Length: 168
Image (cartoon, rainbow, N blue to C red):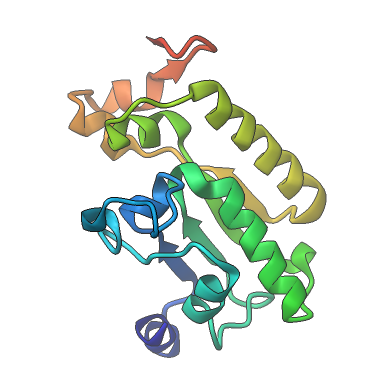
């Protein structure tokens, strides 16, 4: 929070919060492997955690970008609850609570339920459309595909079918 507020005071124009490896997989820190807690981001599992991370930041005026991976739907729920607790209007929220379900699942390297990830994305997108129309919900993580051996064209071209098979 201190680093984020300092960056905003020195010209940064948005609050960017990357969840840690455990959080991006939707794991509670109490149940996650110890080496994934805090890895690559901030551990956010509760409303209190999110409030502390975004303390002092007016979310009606500063766009917020949450990179929560497979936990984008719960992250959006926490963000909406935080705004309500602060007496702020969710409809004025700008930014992204984005996820790339396939890239996140592949990055986790563990079994995953692609159907559930897409269902969560559909629910998140419907919520944003109705409650927070200036919030984006789909993030394309080209780096995940690149790291798996795709070239730049393939990074843009890969799509996933309902069965979870990659096709061009």
